[in-house]
Length: 224
Image (cartoon, rainbow, N blue to C red; front, side, top):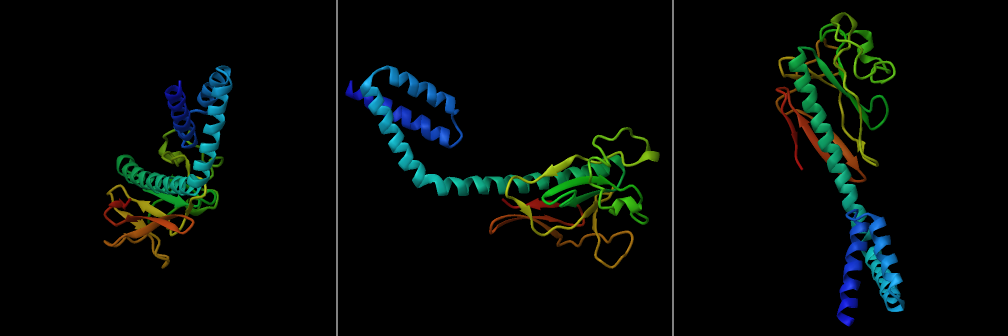
């Protein structure tokens, strides 16, 4: 009986800790505890012991668990941005249309892939409008693929994970030849191609920063 109770104690502890880590559904724990309570007073004592042990372990592990979860969200956000940049380059090449990626657009910590309505040498006024990323003004997917009614190749609005924000950003313009361009502030049209050293796109969580580098040839690098 003692060995069974000890095994039960260990099993319940593992299940509850798994739930805290998001590995087991809380309803599973409730079912196990309810079943144990029906077995009698000794089982209820075991359950109380489990709760006390888990409370102590949770108090000890909570800061580390929160930090791990934050790091996971930051890493996921950086990977999502990297994926969207790669998608923008691919869409520019396959559609033979210049594609921009705009950050903090339409709102902070959001970003969107947008087709250039005009041309790199003569962008349309709407290309730099404040509502260009708006899913209301420019819904996704487009109503048609008519080149006379651009845009036809916008992507959906993307969102960074909770508590993750953009650091360094610049609107990037991907061309059908695979090159990447950025406004250098000189007013030149078309925008100059990025240098071989590239430009930095960063996402942050508290004091931790993840960097994505994009160069003029379209190489997109994220270092884990």
